[in-house]
Image 1 (cartoon, rainbow, N blue to C red):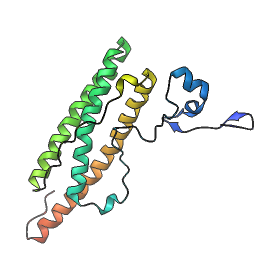
Image 2 (cartoon, rainbow, N blue to C red):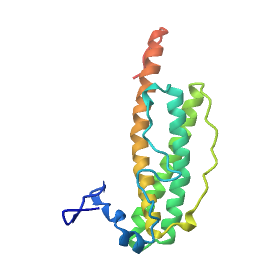
Image 3 (spheres, rainbow, N blue to C red):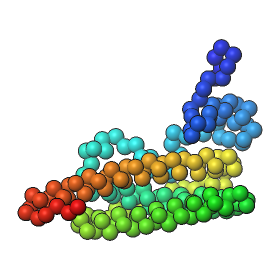
Image 4 (tube, rainbow, N blue to C red):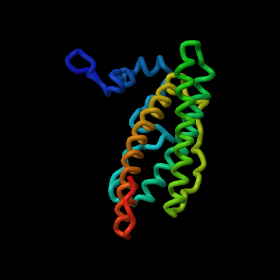
Length: 183
């Protein structure tokens, strides 16, 4: 939108001005869908949940596990698309995404084990949503990959907080039943 002869500052992502996405010629040039939004991207788990504090530890762990299962598939998709456009300059990035995928897989496994240890049921595997990957432009795939990495970072922060709460709760339970709190 233009105001006073200048384009308004749009949303910022990592210091990059995304107001160009709202600029019709840029949208057409990139071959983007006019409804493109970075607020939410289909299939990417959103880390912002209202009333998160009201959820039980089991519900939180289950939500984390479900999110990491989805991120396994999404990171695999990012790797696949990135591999088809791999240049010598991208090899470090490619290796980083592969490493991240291994870490997400390991974290999902650890969450499964923790839920079993705490005698909570494991959430069912959810089928992947409909894929429209063939209809995305290269730029849209890059934006989707960016959103996957951003939300994964947010879920990582959430998981750390949730695991700290589970630890505090289990330590409190141990001392309440005459056990010793673990350090």
